[in-house]
Image (cartoon, rainbow, N blue to C red; front, side):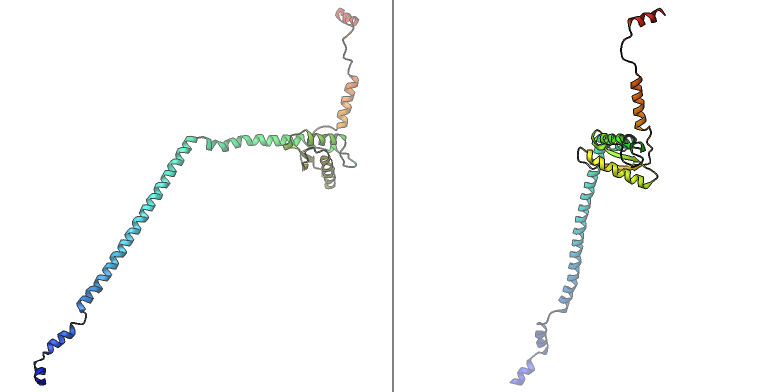
Length: 221
């Protein structure tokens, strides 16, 4: 009976039953083909999204730059010609500033006539000049200029003398600004000027009206 069962068993049915539990090669190949296609589609979609986003951002930046440029141009045209005349005005005013500074340098210049030739100390005229500069001149122009000598020792002694006296007579507590210059002091010594004025006053006639006799004599002539 056992042999009869073995004779009636079909080997193809056994093979078919075993092969039904294994995966199909055709289905596996189909799965492998679908996965790369899905990946390519996903990457393409992501790239498209990035490109679109960057294009929108670039367009937004371009619009902002254009708006800023147009707005700036409007304000420039509205304010014209003010932004462009400022350098011209500065160039026109600069010579006046130079002339004013040169004038104050001449005004505050101390020549050799303001110093004692033996001691290089300030004489009476020099002290009055330094006092006027430190008390009467505008605060922005209280600089003292010394006529430079050929002897460096003379220059240093005169600088020290002016520094000491200017510090004594300063009213606002500012440190005196002293500088040397090659500008020559034009004029005469104060002693000659004083002598000339004194002689003029001594020889000046009395400020009175002439007498009647001298007036009639001059009329008859």
